Structure formats: C-alpha cells, structure tokens
Length: 239
Image (cartoon, rainbow, N blue to C red):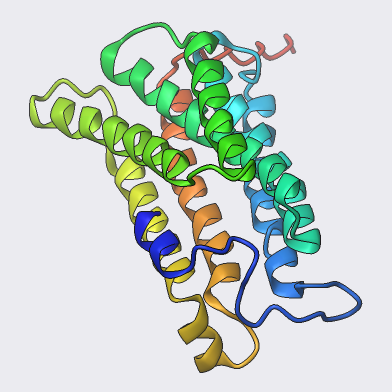
C-alpha cells in the first residue's frame, strides 16, 4: 500500500481505462463481478449448510456479504471516480478486513467470535478512509490494513509453530499470497497496460483478490466439515 501510494498517489487514475460497450473505465468496472461470484458462492455454501446465522460462522457471513457489496460499490467507484465513491467503495473492503481479522483472532485465540471486534475494526478502518477523502493522509488507511493483516498472519504463524493451531493454515497463506499478487498487479498497472495494450494491472488486481478470498473460503469449508457450528442433516424419513 505504501509503495503503491508513493508511485501513484492519485486514486482516480488508472492505465488502459477507456470506455467499451458504453461502459466507462470498462475493465476496471466489469472485473468487480469476480467479487460477486465469490461472495455468492460463500453465502450459498453457508445457507445450504444452515450456518449463515450460526454464531461460529457469522464472521464468514460478514465476509461474503461484504464481497457481494464490494462488487457494486467498487464497480460504481470505478465507473464514476469520485472522492465519496472511494469512501463508499472502501466500506466493503473494510468489512472484509474486519471480518477476516476477527475470525482469525477467534480461531487462533479461542475467544468468542464477537461482532463487537468486527464492527469496531470496520468503523475504525472506514474512519481512516473518510480522513483520506477529506484531504488527510492515506497512510492511516494503509497502516491499518498492514497492522490488521500482518497481525492476524503473525498470530496464525506463531500458533502453527507451537502446534496450537486447530486448522490447516494453508488457506490463510494462499490468501496472503494472492493478496500480494494483487498488490503487485496494482503497482505495475502501467507496464501491464503497455504490454497487453488494452487492459492494465488494476483490473487483474480485482480478479487476484477474489481468488484469494475463495482460497480463504476453503478454511470455512474445512470448519463446516469438521462440525464446528454445523447443523446436522435431517434424518431420512422411514421407508
């Protein structure tokens, strides 16, 4: 985040950002559909398993709702490119950061998945965005992202090293890997545009981020299959 802001401090300028099929900034708009697909997959899985409102899975519900909302808020922001559109766009991003961080704290430390942690992180994150939009420094937003992300990752690594982790950390590591790929694609927006000629790195960032969320969702699937908060399947009717 810090490196990207240093190279491209204007959040309203993207490479290869022309209209197509009547849609302004076409690729930066339509690639947000990836978040809709992943969010719908997560919500559908939870609904089929009867876990959407389960206390143990409500942070996951928050992640997938935020992903669906992000499709529309990010799509609108990249369509209109206005300061307050940026603030609205970041509400869903802050939601994903907050719910993922809160859930990792829950599963690593064994504390209840309280919505107070999730909502507190969401509001704090969005406050830094509002400061940014009002002309303040964007570094607060970047710092909060880094602290939440690296803090949660450090918890997972430490617990895994001590043999105290009750789940496989692979989905978390894959998520972090794809997030790093997304940031590199964002960073090299212009060179990728020059190489492809029609599409920069920023739209690919959306796709990479959505893949990362899907990888993280495999952790949710593993939790459901091991029975945490799961609702037992109804018994078959007597024949």
